[in-house]
Each structure stands twice: as structure tokens, then as C-alpha cells.
Image (cartoon, rainbow, N blue to C red):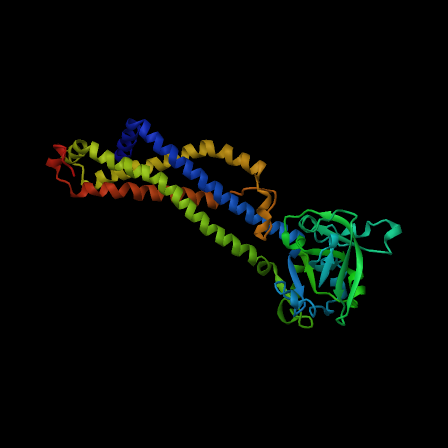
Length: 401
């Protein structure tokens, strides 16, 4: 208790220098929490949007289907042996995929032609727009919905028409005119860029893939059932991919971002701790006679070392307290309003919204507190070790080092 009291008095005696160090360290403390919260918020938002727009909570796909290999799409379609109650229970969405070429405004664009049920409600994709064309033109054109990225790159708007060309099940080329029934906005680029969504039965009809599917999106209730466990996992060789596997791309990117964030946090902390280290070194120089007096009065070298180490640790505690006072209002405001993202952020290839809402977990905050306290203790201890090799008589004369 005596050591803590002496340490606190010495810090308060330094006044301006102490509070300058505390302010710098509190800034580093709040910034580290902010950056980690921003990363956690983006991770959470990316997963939520991807589940809502693309993956659902699981996927049952044709054994030849590889989403990273467009050349696999031509043969990746069939009819799985799923029970009828599964197909009609509202927990599955059938998607048929094939390659095609679109010709908007006189130029050729390679696209993925995807068929989906207009009445589905499992995904956020506004497939209901596929039934919104006026009665007079429904029989003369194929309705399609596209995303903003696709519309922007192709120069399309709602109501525009273009020709698409594809190969049917026999490998024969065919072409039809499609009309853009709607343009949706999403944070998930893999649902948007280079993709053309049309009614499922229409795609089956024009390709000759009657009743066939490339993959099923699985809803939350069905994904948690026993249908995908044990010997019943494969239906005619079809593969079931759970949500954790579908999220691996996002996890990989987040892990890479976390590595960069750790480097930034370390540099910020080093800058703040350098000020404490400098203060401790100067303090030992200035207080040589005081140190000699402590030892002459019976204080052990270990206790004197503890005195300076505790002083540095109090810096951290005061910084955390100060950071809490001004950081909570700031971080709460950022959590409510979100962080606007630049227009080009969607080129990352993963879901990034116009705003990212930072997410602060108690575990993340406590780990940051421990990081600041422990590193401050270590940085304070390093210069204090010099005291262990001092001679009391030399210290009393101001010749500690």
C-alpha cells in the first residue's frame, strides 16, 4: 500500500508530463478498440448479408458443381432424390446455373444465367420482380432482375432490353430477348456482378433441363435437422455444404485483416509506451538522491524497483479510466451512426455495406485492457532494473548511474 501511495504522489507531482503520457496512452487504447470493433462489425455484417442474399444456412449442390469453376456449370445439373416434403416446405430454394452471353448496348458481356423461383422468400433477392412485367409483353420477352453492379457495368436500366445467348442441354446455341424487370441493390457482389436472374421454369424450358437444379439453398430450420447426417447425407451423390464451410472465404479475409490490425495496434501502443519509457528513464535520473534515501531508510532494491514499475502501471490505469470517460460516448455514437465506406469498397469481392456498424464485445475490451496494463508494466520495469545495481552512497551523491 505504501508503494502504491508513493507512486501515485510522484505521478501527481509530475503534473503535465503525467497527464500528457496518460492522454497519449488513452488515445491508443480507444483507437485499438475502435479498429478491432470495426473489423468485428464488418465480419458480422458480411456473414449476415451473405446468408440473407446468397448462401442461406446450407447448400445441397450437384456433385460436379464448383462455384469457382464456370466450366463445371454445363454438366452440374440434375434431379436429387429429396423427399417431397423437403422440397415443398419453404426451407429450400432451387437455383439452376448456366453460362451465357449478353449483348447490352451493342457489346458482348459474359454472364451467369441463374434461374430462381419468383415466389421464393428464403433469400432477400427480389425474385418477385420477375412477375412484374406488364401483361402485354410477358409472352414476348424473358423477365430478368440484375444488381446495381451489373447494371452499371453494362449501362442498363429498368425496362431495357437485350439479347442473351446460351447453350442448351444438347450443346446447341440459342438466343432470346430479355427485359430488365428490376435492378436490386445488395452488399454481396457474388449475387450481383455478372449475374442475370430469370424465372426458374423459364430457364429449364429454354435449356431443356426440365425439373433440374444446380444447387439448393437451405433454410435455417432444415439446416439444423438430421437430414444431412449419417448415411443420408448424399442424395444421388449430391453434396451438402454446411454454413461454416460456406463462410470460409469471409473467415480467410477476416483473418488476413486481423493480422494487419494487430500490426497497427502494436505500432500505436509502442508509440504511447515509448513516452512512458522515456518518462521513467528521466525520472530515475532526476530522483537519484530520492532513491538513495529510500534505500538508506531500509527500503530494499526490489521495493524501489516495484515503486517505479507501479508508477508505470498507474499510467495505464489512468489512461484506461480517461479513455473510458471520452471513449464510451464516441464509440457509442459510432455504433449508432456507422462508418461510411468509400464507393470502391465493393471491389473487395466480399460483402461490404455503405456503412459498417462497429461491434464491441466485452472479451475484446477486456483483452485490450490487459494488453495495455501488461505492456505498461513491462515497459516500466525495464528502466527500473538499473536500480538493482546501484550503490546507495553514490545514489545519495546523485551518481546512481
